[in-house]
Amino acid sequence: MQTAKQAAKQIIDQVSDQASWDDIMYELYVKQKIEKGLKAVENGLTVSHEEAKKRLLGNAD
Image (cartoon, rainbow, N blue to C red; front, side, top):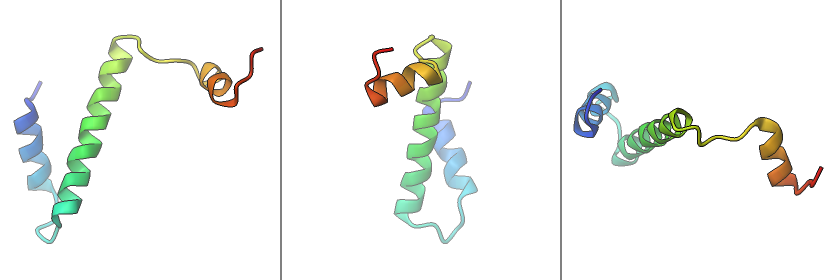
């Protein structure tokens, strides 16, 4: 597993030479959110689609 620094370097190397600071920051943000989501799945911290709908729509079925 690569470190955060290694992942950041890889992302920076992959973006276009014309990428803005905002483009780079967005790519880093997305990578961070994906990693966080994958860790949540590994730790069983997810809910089913039906449970999410219930929570969002306020259904007490």
